[in-house]
Amino acid sequence: MIKNIVNKINSKTSSLCLIDEPLKKHTTYGIGGPAELMIFPKNKKDLINAIQIINDNKMELTILGSGSNVLISDNGIKGAVISLKNTLKNIEVSGNNLYAECGAMLGKIVKLAVKNNLIGLENLNGVPGTLGGALIMNAGAWGGEISENLVCVELINSKNELKKIPKNEIDFSYRKSSFTKNDILLSADFNLKKAKDDIISENFVKAQTGRKNSQPLNKRSAGSLFKNPKNNSAGKLIDEAGLKGYSIGDAKISEKHANFFINDGKASSNDMLKLIKKAHDTVKEQFSIKLELEVKLMGFKENEIEGLC
Image (cartoon, rainbow, N blue to C red; front, side, top):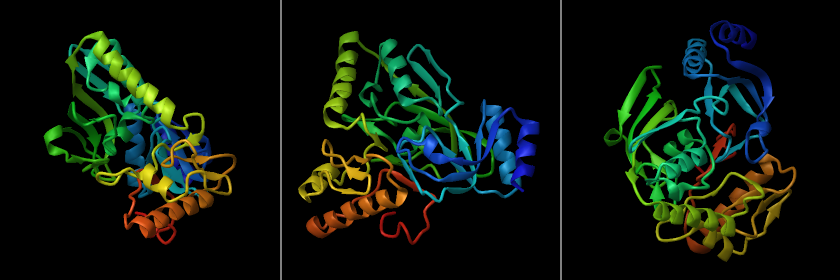
């Protein structure tokens, strides 16, 4: 069946198809088993055609951006995994408007906005991942969120229909959005404001310096692991629970920032999952606070992640 689907995709697109591709090669954690079928479309047309073929063959579909903000099981992911790392990279600025495709890295989008003296995105400097992932989780930092200056999003819905959705039809909240797991985000438009160089640069440098000073940027991680509870900090709670520096195998809670769980060698997904559960359960026991994951768990069985999601 897989080879038949690959042949169909090859005949209708210029996508690269790989069978049993190790996902650890495509995640910032360096963790993850094989994708049954991994597809790298070259453009939007390739992507739409590949999705149509996968849907027609009733194959499970997973979209992977830059591979940040995810922990993938060492057992891998069944079905097709479409990677956007080599496509949907276009970014354009026209006046106060910024258009970007959802495979573009957030850092590049921020830098282009700053270069054009546009204020509104510079606080997101250093946030890892693609625009698509940032929109789905309503990424934010230093008081700003990606949704604040959003105008609309273009996506493919569960019916494989191409739609342009205005912001007022999307619900955003802290690290959440109303996009469904079947929505595949293609591009977004932002309306920003012109500002003086020094104001934008100050915000940009502040975000950059803050991350450098407080986060283990030289280690393999998936970014902030838990969402911050209301009026509290996940990192502070994990630290106060005595878990900063705690490790299971090569999975370790960073000594620099307790909400960053790092792969300090050859950590398995099982090691990392055990460490996540340890922090989650300890904080719940000591402070009666249930931490919610910001990192997405992929490829795990329901009983493995029970109580976390």
